[in-house]
Length: 259
Image (cartoon, rainbow, N blue to C red; front, side):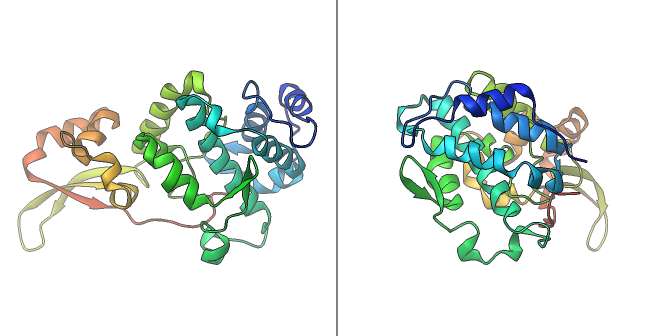
């Protein structure tokens, strides 16, 4: 079913339709993305068919991002800008191949995360550059639960854009939501030992394996990061069995996060 963008999002798109080359201001910049996400994302699942019908609005948002100089942004504005940019660029990447795509991994590597094709202030970036050279060095591990690679085992795509003024709460909510999902974020329990006895096992997403050094500090382990955001029952289990706890990683489902 086709869902129209909110009036606020449409007005924001008009406001951002500046002269070619003119820099768009951050105020209201991400309202069009919120309009698109709220209309086409539910519980992390994307209605790509509906979003395809609104692709022109997504293109207009990407054009607005291209006119912003991220070097002029304060830290939280910059974090929100690049998180939203990463997600919007990924959505565009999928729409270019929809409906004939079942996984982002169907796209050749050179045209997927390493393709320098996303324009910001006259420079072309790849998704890898945004993630590994811009976002990760900013020292905020919760970005891994905000940026989404269009796959079911990724964190849920939020139904709204990230904004500087609400960023901390949004990142915390995204992290907690992911760890509350036992299929892809975190699960735990007692399992039979390989030969005998019982093992107490904490299963966490492969994200904690791939980006382990982002979650660890000199005085914090990955498990301690998880404890800060995990559901109460998981926290109780981890604390009770901490000395005997085995940490393993869940399998990763790369299928498209769509209907």
